[in-house]
Structures are given as C-alpha cells and as structure tokens.
Amino acid sequence: MNEPIRWIDNHMPPSDDRQLSKMALDEVAKARFFHSSFPQYSVTPLARLDGMAKYLGLAGLYVKDESFRFGLNAFKVLGGSFAMARYIAHQMGRHVSEMTYDYLTSEQLRQAFGQATFFTATDGNHGRGVAWAAHKLGQKAVVHMPKGSSQARFENIAKEGAQVTIEDVNYDECVRMAAAEAARTHLGVVVQDTAWEGYEEIPTWIMQGYGTMASEAGEQLRQIGVNRPTHVFVQAGVGSLAGAVVGYFTNLFPHDPPKFIVMEARAADCLYQGALAGDGKPRIVEGDLKTIMAGLACGEPNIISWDILRNHVSAFVSCPDWVSARGMRMLGVPVKGDPTVISGESGAVGMGLIAALMETDQYRDLRDYLGLDRFSQVLLFSTEGNTDPMKFRKVLWDGEYPTV
Image (cartoon, rainbow, N blue to C red; front, side, top):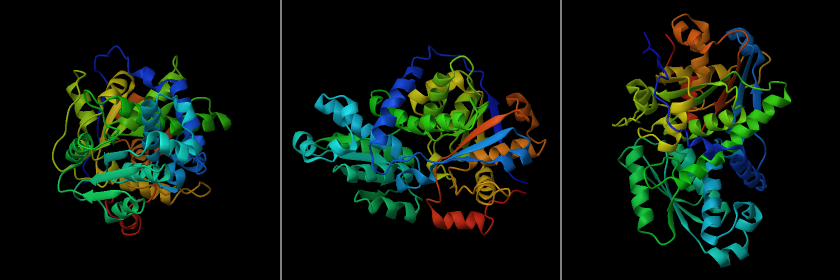
C-alpha cells in the first residue's frame, strides 16, 4: 500500500495580517509591467481540462502551464528577474517602472550602475532563472545546488554563464552558503525566495514577481467566463509561491476569496508541520529532504509567506511522491480532447492530489471539508515542465512511483 496523504485543517490563530499588502494588486501590476518589457515575454497557457473535470466530477479544472515561461520550462524566472530590477532601481534611487528590459541591457545602465553578482541557492529552476536574467541583463550569477541535484538542471544553469556548484549539503545549508559569500563580495547580493529576520525585502520582490503568473491566470479565467475559482491548489517549498498566489487572489477577491489548499512534499512538509502544531509559529524540517519534488525540498519557511498562509489557507496537505507521479501521468496522458500538459515532479502534485480526493472515498473527509463537488471551479499551477528529462521518462514511461 502507498503511504497515505496527510492533511490538517487550518485552526491557527490569525495574526494582524500585515504581510498581505505586499501582494496588493498594484504591486503585482508593477511586476507584470516589468516582465512584459522583455522581448521573450508572453502569457503562458491556461490549460482547460474539460474532459478531466467531467471525469473527476468537477465543474471545471484549469492548469496554468509554466513550461512555456521565457523558454526556461519553469515559472521561477519571474521572481529572480523582478528582484534584480527592484534591487538595481533601489541602488540607483530610481522607480522600478524605469527598469525596462531595454534600459537594463543598455550601456547607459552599465556606466551608471556597474555590475553586481547575484548569489543564490537552488534545486534547479530558481537558479536557472537567476542565471538567465543575470546573463540577459549583463550581471553576474553564482549558484549553489544541494547534494543529489540533477545533472540536467546543473547543465541548464551552467549554459546561462553562471558559476554553479553542487554542494554536499541540503538546500537550506546552500542558502546560508550563498548569503555568506554575498556578504563578502563587492556588489554581492543574495537573491533567495526564502525570508528570515533581516532579509525580507528581496524575498518580497520575488513573491511580487511570482504574482505575474497569478495575475495572468485570474485574467485568463475571466476571459473564459470563470469570474472566480472556488478552489486554488498551490504547492510549496519555502512557501513563497504559495504566499504569492494566496496573497494575490485574496486581494483580488477580498470579500469572497477562493478556498486555498497548500501542498508539500512529505519529506519537506514544514508548513504542514506548522499547521499541525497549531500555535501560529513556523516549524523547520531538517535532514536530506529526499523527494522527487526537488523544487519543493525546502525545510525552512519564508516568514513573510507563512504569515499570509496562516491567515488564509483552508488546509495544508503533506503529499508522498506517488501523488506527484500520478499527476505527471494524468497531465501527460490526458482525457481525449483535453490539452496535454508536460508537468515535472514539482509541477504535477496538484493534479495528483485533486484526483486522489475525487476518485476514491479514502480522502472523503478532506473532499467534504473543502466542499469539492460538481459545482467546483479548480485552479492548479504546473510550475515546471520536464526540467529533469530522464526522471520524467522514468515516471511516465517506466511507471516509477506507481499508485497501488
């Protein structure tokens, strides 16, 4: 038998909710304006899975497909690039609206600002996004990856001209390494989407950058006549993406927000553990954090996101690896008539979870608690494509992590 999915309803005491304003609609609009200045920018598809929705007993199922983002196969570049722009604007005493792609790549900027070195830790996608943006904008990047990182993801970062290493420590230790090196470097900046005391500005900018994806999705739903999703499923590592999505949609629908469900890899379920403790304080998960969901293998929460999530999430769910593998197969081999979504290990956990909830009565308690039924309009985020092609084939072709 497979290890079961675990979940906890949110019964934490609310805070003063002061972090919610960081995902205000006007702040996200600044990020989207910045991203739209890139020649590589286009709105990524929202896959409408009508056949799958009918099969699962839902009114609608929609998957934001980030495999098309800037040609990088993942959403993460949205955060790192916007944080770079905000940092440069701040250093120069300029408004971020002036930091267009054309200006940031100009000789004028090079003369006025010089060249910074952006340090980061990554399981793959964030580092590739930082390296890509640094390369495009004429800046430098240094990237540290945790032990067990895939060679394909390493090579994709190296191709962008970054200095990249795989270290013999976990993700959270790589974050500390990047921060220490940045502190010793002239114009060295750590660009990390996890926040801690004294390091909150750049993670906020990264979250606002992620807001571009949420903003596009909300707009795309309205264009097909879905004014508001009833349920939003979003995955979490440190929680920055989850905080960005939950924060944006809470601000978009302040009087009637969707129900939010946050999903984590079982091996790194720090947000679930915090919700389980129930006192409103974040928890840390230590160790090797071994999971196929490499982008979610983070044990220390972003404290800004945590504050948003504790106030607005309905349920926190801890998912074994088979949940993601099932989602990869269902999206990659869809119901006849539905579009195919090539979703990687960290991107497909939402599909695997919604299927588990709707297909059997094993998780009827969570399905009933969330009110998932034939009237539900469900939004998922496939945050990456096949960023590790060999692992993708092993799951889809060879049936790794079967559902039994």
